[in-house]
Length: 204
Image (cartoon, rainbow, N blue to C red):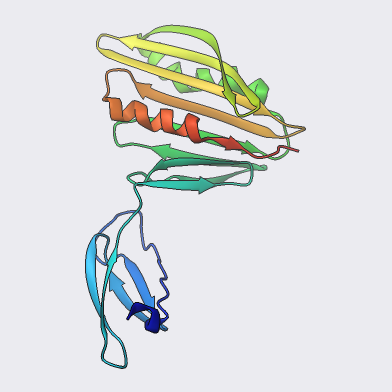
């Protein structure tokens, strides 16, 4: 019986790639290599054989000090320290759809909205893309995210980028998204799921 085994799982991700046996299953202190969606037979000291299968949830939650959001387990967000009290979390797909969240510990980043949008689109504008921007806003719980949207177009290439700020007292979040409008509905789902599930914790 499984209850007699005092089963404990220890999952160690060796890399972002979901290759075979990238995880370690620990049963009563003994490690066993195992891969996602694979079955492992574990023989207990008393001779009892357990069949254990490791699966990933379809949807995962990503937590940071200032925010949390849900995402498909097909993609792995990552956070890096940009220095100066700024941390950036990136969620991106191979097709170029992306969500970027920057946390500012020492300043309200609202004044950076325009500059960030220009930085994201300047190479395309220089190349000759048509450019159109507008003011946008979104409700995130009881908070309002305000920002700007830019649409860049060149022949059949059409990108939509949005930059929002959620300010606190000498701190805040800068959120920007990008998507190619000719992409699949699944690409839009990445951004829609982010906004639908985003929760901002109290900004001091």
